[in-house]
Amino acid sequence: MMRKLEIKGTLILIFVTLIWGSTFSLTKISLKYLTPFFLLFVRFFLGSLSLSIYFIAKRDPLTINWAGSILGIINFSAIAFQTFGLRSTTATKGAFITGLSVLMVPFFERIFLGSKIGVRLWFSVSIAFLGLTMLTVDFKQIGYVNWGDFLVFICALLYAIQIVYIAYVVHKKEVLDLAFSELFLTALLALLFHIFLKQEVSL
Image (cartoon, rainbow, N blue to C red; front, side, top):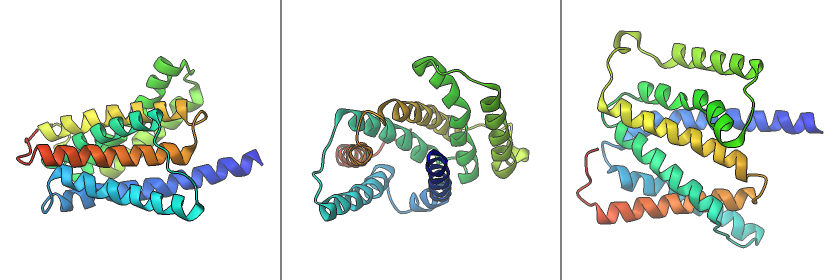
């Protein structure tokens, strides 16, 4: 039974990764027509709306909790940095730099959760990093770093923190409540920033 759950979880993560990977190019294109904060609002409003419809169909109450709200703040900050960064860097470089969060997660787990970093984990992370490098890095521009790259790197740091925090709270809270709280607060923050910063700063 446990083995089936592990396989199911792995397949879901692979599917999520496929969707996540497509967002870099789509975000880059969307920024030609929408401002960053409005784009974030649209993305996460649609996500929270979809989850709301699911809750209503299941006749379950919509709950916003503190853990999910903290995730929403981290998520909003991370994607805001990423979105602004993609204004001045390429989608492939953005994907590579964001993917560096994979390397950071074990270290943050060690710092915040006290988890051990085993040899198998080191090997897996190294292989993932090598594959990510081969898929996304343009070696002709590897020495060229711009402001957008730095902003996306901050995004990677925040994503790593987000993943570790999810690992900490996911066994204490209902998963869908966490997801809804995160999506709703991300959309709300994006809308507020869009309203109050109509002349959006160029980070």
